[in-house]
Length: 397
Image 1 (tube, helix red, strand yellow):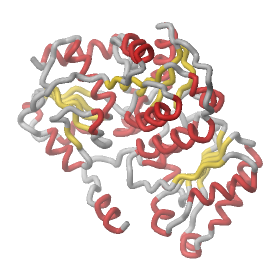
Image 2 (tube, helix red, strand yellow; image 1 turned 60 degrees about the vertical axis):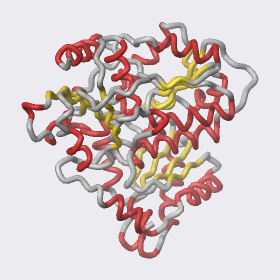
Image 3 (cartoon, one colour; image 1 turned 90 degrees about the horizontal axis):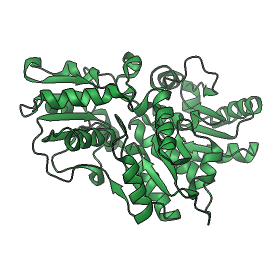
């Protein structure tokens, strides 16, 4: 535990602000549900989630609470206070589910959030979930844990598969930012002849989660949805496609139909060694892979490398793709002489030492730059993103 803590501490940011942590990711999953969400902390982590990691918070009336953890509570290990306050909130809100999240202090003192959730459920009769989040891992870890917990609890096996139906896995504001992006994706799939059976999670509901086992295919639009896709394949034999539809949607409709008909999974990327990367795309791995695929398949731009900010999953990676676990690794990659151009969140542009040697294209991601560029996150299914890719391909040949 101490060595893990030291390894995480060695990744402290110097120039960049910290990226969205695991407790924010788990909280964002429950945000769409009729839920009481409690972050077990003094107040800073709750404020970090609602103020900086959750674009939907402003103007909303969602039940997101802080436990008000104090120094004496931490010293004495007073979990009863958390239980009492959460039960009081549940009495007022009457939620469908309760979710309690850990933070750095509960991690240090060894608070059992899963055990506390069991106590809450026993006392209230409301399904409760506890997550031993620490704030030391990125948001996608929390998202993945929350997806799996909800599916394992509520998604029921069925013998009736709904023909032409799809689940969307991995929709969070940390990746998609705008609610319009989630709405655009659902609308695009519907207009392409698909019935969206369930969305995990933006725009999703508990009723959708319960019926998700009947889908013909899963569309994984972010790395955080992959473990859920693997679990659903094992439990319900649902194949999956890993791809984020962008621009005009590309060929995602064909990929989904082939996967559903052939019962075979597909990770959409260019099956080639893309060299050392005239273009470096830095960001969430599935989105970055999808951008690379479209730039190569549609615009003929080759020699593209992906830099993975939130973990390099070997199942999704090409040989020269980079794992960028901390600011030092990002700084080294972004200044590599092989990269003529960089496509990344605008917050990373300040790390470039010689701007005249590296052309920079901005694509904001909420998990990276938070509210600094929320209003500049583009509509992913739009001509604007197609034009951006066209410009990058033209100027990077």
